Image (tube, rainbow, N blue to C red; front, side, top):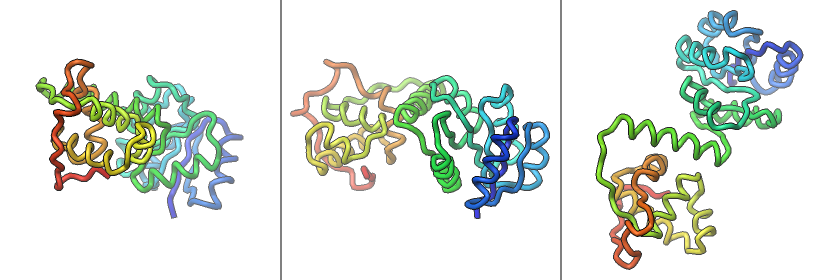
Length: 230
């Protein structure tokens, strides 16, 4: 059973969540402040720590929990879905979040997701995180020359960066699913990546403006069998 620790300054909210979650998870503790909770979190080693993101010290609290209990997954509660807030909490160490409009079912789904090493978020927030990853990669790596993509490949990698699946891309562009997969094989080979997340992170660097891409007729169609486009 997933072991959960809750930190929220609002007692009514805190007690209500403990009652609601206890039938599904092992709630091993609840505190009003991260200062009081930190030594107990470090000692009890929960799987998931729920932190109220409305607290004034929430960013510091996330970083402190991530340092004291690195194996624990930190979930931000009642987080406003705005780009700056997500970025700063993600950099502090959250593994997931529940928005202010989120339901109890949403919270349960997020707890189960982060415990599996996954993160649930809206497509817009996923794009925000990918843009941040791209920016960090650009800061850490020397400048590289752009690789050329066809107009169709540029469209596809942009949709990958938005978080769309292969089927959704096929529907959006009115093309067959195997065609999407073939394009992705070529894109992965040209970008020298093996995962969708890596390709998406490079999308803004490698997708050139109109006029700088090759015509679709001149594209390479050689698939890369060593890389997965699924």
